[in-house]
Amino acid sequence: MQQKQIALVIGGTGMLRNVCHWLVENGYIVFIIGRSIQRHKSLKENSPNPENIHALPVDYHDLNQLQTELNKTFHTYGSPQLVVSWIHSSSPVALPLIINELSTKNTSIPWRLFHIQGSARFLKKENTPVQLNCLYRRVYLGFMIENNISRWLTHEEISNGIIQAIKNDNNETIIGTLEPWDMRP
Image (tube, one colour):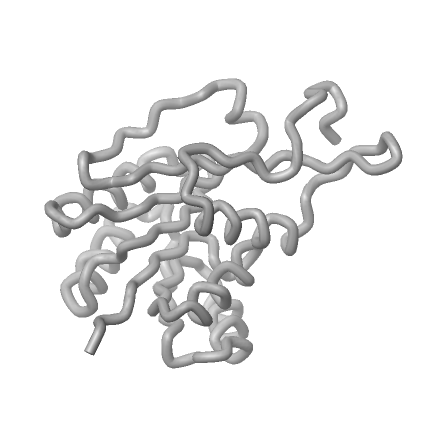
């Protein structure tokens, strides 16, 4: 019997909710880091396979709690092969902590990290410290231009773009457009 793949999604109860459902539909057991118990409950209730969605009700700003929950989860279920991360810049240490936890627990098996960033990060091209076994993928959230008017991406457009990024497995993906920059909403 083939063991199920495990995914960790940070920010999965909001704009990444459809990504979580897609992962479940594609055979993943999905662990979702988010603060809202009610949003976790709603996500699970609306899942095609609710038994494969697990809430990690953690605020990733609380690094001790984050590390404790990750250790407990990885010890019980194993390490994820896929991580989708939407972490706000207000917690710059959360993603390196997650990367370190995964890389020390899972030293021989490569795992993929899809790091989602806002459009302003495109100009900075920050380096994210990754380990040898981490296949790092950067996803930028751009904007849409329709009839010469720009707007931000919808949650559905974001989710669909991230699903495509996972399928295509490119090193860098832009959802929407980032040009012309002066058209940003």
